[in-house]
Length: 118
Image 1 (cartoon, rainbow, N blue to C red):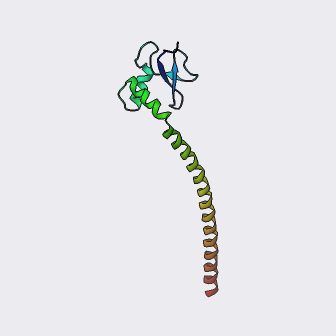
Image 2 (image 1 turned 135 degrees about the horizontal axis):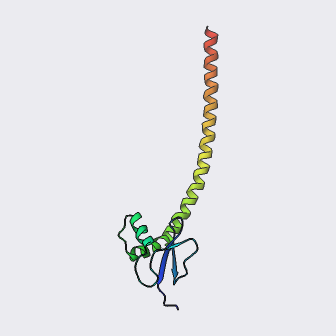
Image 3 (image 1 turned 90 degrees about the horizontal axis):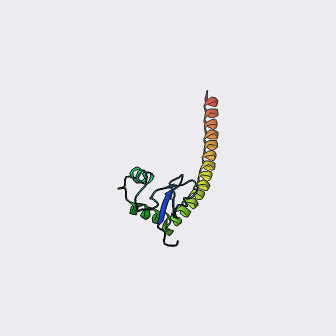
């Protein structure tokens, strides 16, 4: 039955899945009815939570957006940015520690100078 309609389901973290017939992916909730092109209660809730008008076409568009190449590239860029951020944070921490030690040494020198004057 290659002519079955494509249906959509939502997973735990909001990821959309496409499937046909009654073969709902594990851990996913169907958003479109099996025998007609209407939203299930979960589909209506999905749209409502995102502030959209409940309509099956909206879910198709959201699925296309999630699986598009641009979204994949954005996700990869986010991962790279996080890796760079960790490195940058480590360098900032090292610099802060060096400054703290330098200021502590300067403060100690200042306190010693004050004691010598008295």
